[in-house]
Image 1: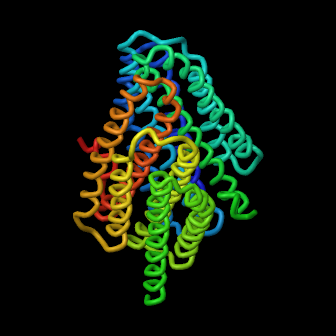
Image 2: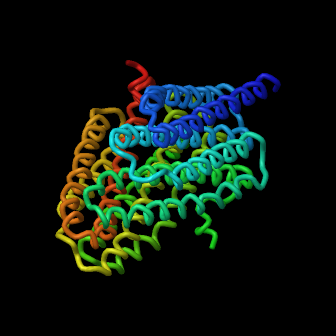
Image 3: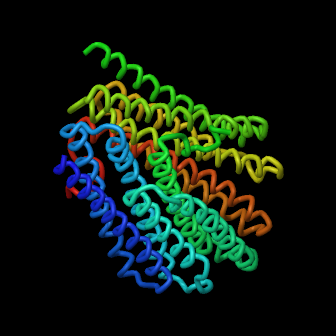
Length: 219
Length: 219
């Protein structure tokens, strides 16, 4: 069924495209904060509807393929997993938008201290998104397991980011609202990493066809 | 096709059951905090794997129905929407677990002030989950629009909760870590409400068969 193979290939490419858009949004959102570039923040916010539109388009294509091609087994699982993954990608786009909203607020005030943890978190989460989607489209490998491992790094950086801000807040309570906005940015990145982890778990689940999602069940 | 109708009915009931479990988890997580009941918090954490297991079971049933019954049109959309909704419900369960983790930490320290906003937020988010799922299983009505409206209330309460804690933090910086844990609980509830809103949007989308999700696109 050559047409269906072509359609699946096109679907995979659309998912990758959505992933690139989300990666760009993450990178630019953090760049708008670190480089105090509010015009860039507004651009990312304005561009979020493109991510939303592509999510809907991919979902529609999935429903069309299920109805028209009546896929079974591996193909069906690929298509239903695609529909779950697009939700995670779209939410990541929303979180990049949230980062930009905080950036717009923070850019109006003097900078508390240089950003160290947050750019590092952004790098790791971007690589997690990329690798989770690579694992999804290129077939089954060790890659999704590595994505899941990297989530701990992001969690550690969230804590470190907070621990570095806490003494500043204690020293000068007036900066609390500002410092909290920085902790929120770290939290958003942590959630993006969680979404990438979810994708990786779904890929493992799809590959193995058994219960790797929610591993605690199999204990 | 009477068997398929029965199967869809059973699927609807499983989704409702998952919803009840999540509602219980939200209520108990906040109860464990407000009533300083750490045993209850541990119980909710321990029970989260049941929510995860039911999510997986429902997804498996969806894939089985698609493969076996080859549904089209409305039924197919119902089943694919189910698979997207279970993801949101499972994440809500995780967030209730996060609330319990903070409750365990907060219950070990003296209470800063009585809880007012957080129990109210929990009530609203529970009603949002219930109504979003009712809208999903009972057919198309005004209900999902009302769910979406209530999300603003939850957002307002998150802000109010923070604004009430801020002066305490400024007054006594030693309580910042504790006060922040309370703001995190509010944030978790806000995210649960966001998930309920997502479900409501998906229900509207499913009903209308057109673009209500991401309404900004149609502007």
